[in-house]
Length: 189
Image 1 (cartoon, rainbow, N blue to C red):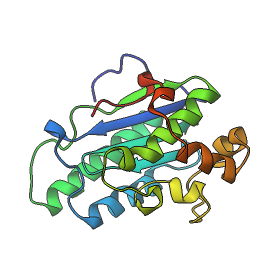
Image 2 (image 1 turned 180 degrees about the horizontal axis):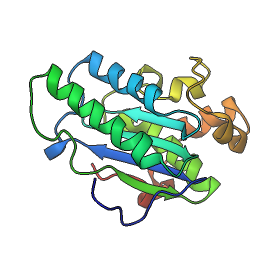
Image 3 (image 1 turned 120 degrees about the horizontal axis):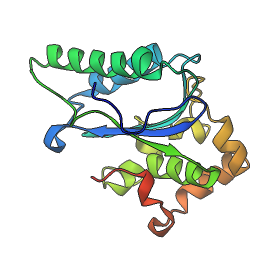
Image 4 (image 1 turned 90 degrees about the vertical axis):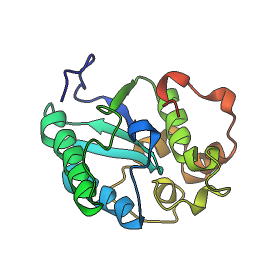
């Protein structure tokens, strides 16, 4: 993996994202989405990283993580992405890169940025026009935040405590205004 301009630091929160080569899909069928999530559960161990939020889209992904280990790149991210690409290439009989270069990372430096970014991540399928009801998207952590699904892998406590609980977080996500978004924390589609 190429040298990162700004290294990922321990005890920091990051927005990680990437998309497919030429904006092509990185998920081709239902089992790919599930495989990516299961690989996250396998590689993203609590001693290394906590997953605060995620959303998987047809041609890209968003991960909001809190880093707990200096070995996040070598022990978690490199093997995770390599394993997913290898699996997809083998299963779909394809060759070559799946992602458009190395993953991108942006440090989240305030509670305000954290909550706005979590909303951006969760609303991604609605804003992309894939669905109209945020609760319809199966491939995000929003159902965990809204209390519709129990998943201990997703660490909701930090964001929900900042927001004052599930009800206020749901209202925040649903009462979205594009003007409130910090463009420095998001991905260009």
